Length: 366
Image (cartoon, rainbow, N blue to C red):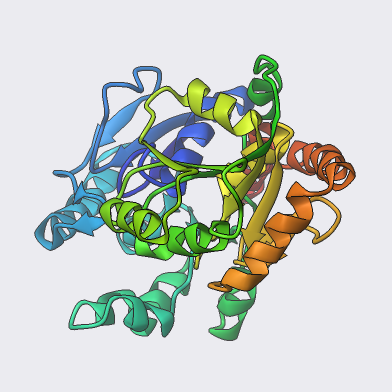
């Protein structure tokens, strides 16, 4: 059975693409032949079969070329109609409409995964003429196309979808638990805090830096990642007079990043929006404590005071207090490390893809 896994672009750009790649690597165990349909086909994924349907839609993340997006829609629809596909699986906003229309045209079932739902929040984030296309009308139409199955990542998005009349099943993304367990042991620095992710406004790393201003020089904050806010964040750190904050930039060696996470006492995710949050779960699997804002994804797997801390979004004092509590209590750290590993085990990619394969089985048997 041939499965078309459709996504706007291919990992490692965002979590959507990471999910598609991990599905493509595992679906063969269940008798499926996955083919990725995307606007990009990177050479660093030679083990995966891919079809590049258009020119890249994202030139400089997260900015898109709108003409390329229209070409992606047209060509995705055309390619899926031409090829012999048994089931279409659409991931991410831009894939939903062309995949559902192609499914209708060739009379093949379509599974869709909606990774986020902005609705009226989109206009506040983007504004202007283009906000209409990503706002309420487009998202409602996309969510209510005639799918054989509609999936999403967390309880918050599921509730939003229910309000607009779309019924979805939660199938979360995951992490490679076995790979993380194989990581070599490194010495834990009980005074080191780490952030890993893009340096964009939505990630609110400025809140973390301001919260860290309370800690003296024996504590260290390491910031890993690149983005359009890096200069502003470095200037903020200097203006506060922080000497214990370092910017490592983007580290291409993924194993090195995981070693740095594992050697840290805590990973902090101060995002304003996080629909799943792969990095916090990876930190848990690596035995590192996690403090995250109470965003959609982390709220589903972080139990405050048991396996981590949740903080209020954009609340500097709350984040500061949670970091202080954790960094000064090694018994609490060890509790979070133990419970975090148990939590992470439930989000293994193998479990996620097994559930998705069962959904395909049920649909194709009908």
